[in-house]
Length: 118
Length: 107
Image (cartoon, rainbow over all chains, first blue to last red; front, side, top):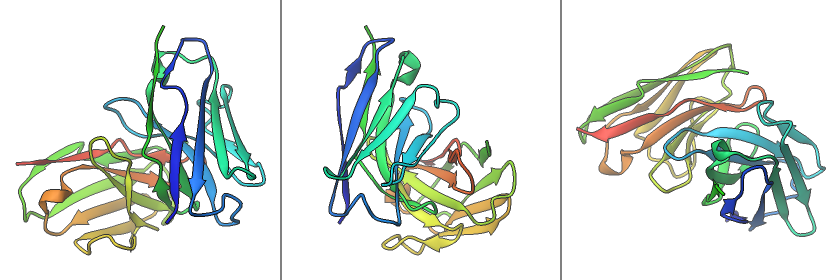
């Protein structure tokens, strides 16, 4: 059973960089079949796709966030990470990591709330 | 970006009712559509992918149909555990986009 777990600070100051890591267990992040995604959900709102990464390091970002986002992968640790720079209150959200086969997103982390506030 | 428009945004229904949710894409996406169920405080759960394929373990009262730009999620007989918010998602092209959600509430 594949499991994903987000970790990182729950509070980030405005203008700073949000950093989260997703640890994958029960399966290899180096699988040919999957991309590894970050998706966020502001409180009380809908889902927004941030981007995903393939184990080779190829990335695809949402153009609305592209200038501020970096997603990286560490296959030796079976982890992938998100960095979002120059955050504002609008970046306050529950951040999910997930496994994406391009047709479906079948495994999600539990989500972690990141609040941007001074 | 492909815009996904869901309707209605909310629906009140009773246990046993048939509920239909629609999702419209701003351009053709073939069958690259998935449906998710989300309950408060939980991550979304995959229900249907490729527009009409039921994910393993999902009850058969859920069904999906459509292709191109118009899609439907149907719950044939609403159960108490089905009260939740439902999202459609297209994966035809990046950026991946989601519908705004449909909240199914108890009548």
